[in-house]
Length: 461
Image (cartoon, rainbow, N blue to C red; front, side, top):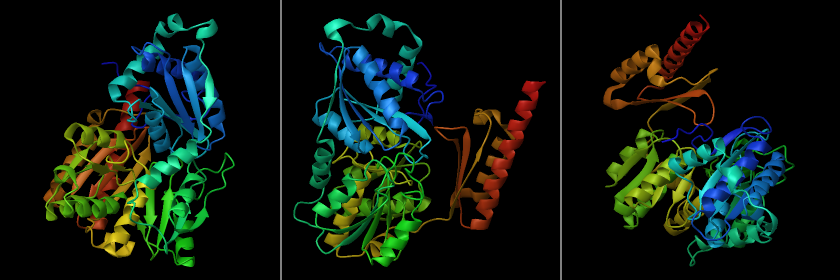
């Protein structure tokens, strides 16, 4: 199979207007998407395009639409909407593909493109590899159309409204948020209008921050990666819950009434154990990645369930869920997938499921998550390198990792991986003593640095 070079674990990503994230690439990608999506349909492809609030989104949106139209495809523009909104609208509009222009939690200077099939699920690796192959061939040049066959672009004027209705439909109809105080942090991103509307229309007294995008402030000191201001607002307003979304709103971090940040592992523990008790967790199995805390796995086993682990990336979580007929999965970072409701991670939908649990159990968020799992000490460290080398080609790192795993034994875990979007080495270690695992993580990164320096010296020689 053609190896993917452009696509990482979550689409293509980079600095906007620098390779690969250029309008030239977007134009070619639009042509490839239209070609693949329209194949065998007997009609032009229909493609939904959504974006977050980055200024560079205008540039890439226009280029993508031009490429699709050049192949005879028809484009439906949604404007700024969350990533899960594009997945939903792709299905509800009977489109053949969906495209999201977003770099998620990255700063405004970055941007990205991720693709969805007509079923609302992210394209599998094989299909992304096929698209890359098309970009390198001349097949697209031969397939371009002229005259009346050139496609057109139109705008879905009520895209946000459609998605708002969908989100509300995932909340139990016999419940309301009446009497609850909720603070929403939209990260100045794609959900800056949708998220406040959803919680308010369900009855919550909603306070909003991070809802004034200017194209340059997405994720800036706001959102799931920067919850400090949200914590302050939750405590000041004595709110029952704080909801922090990232730039494209496919992930969430919650803040409880005490001001504690609740990550994806704790939220999965709450929801999975509740679904287990109700007989609603398919095959009594939760899906998470290798990065999820060992405490989550132990909590599932203690509750009579089990945890299935995948590679890092919500796409791999979803693929495992679909392959095995499972309905709940996610990542520690806050991508939570409720497959009974949505085909991808959805921060707003996830928050609503937790709120439903709070109401039906009659408990605060802090009491729910504090009793859901006992976290094993975990350290996450990373370092940026000039190039990405195969891990097995770094002998000092391999040796150091084996020694760390032997030292920890069954009481801990070691995970070393390259980031899916940049040459950054990430090390995760769990164990009983925080000081020990922190030292081991530093030693692994130092070992990798030595190996990379030696490899560079050999290349120069």
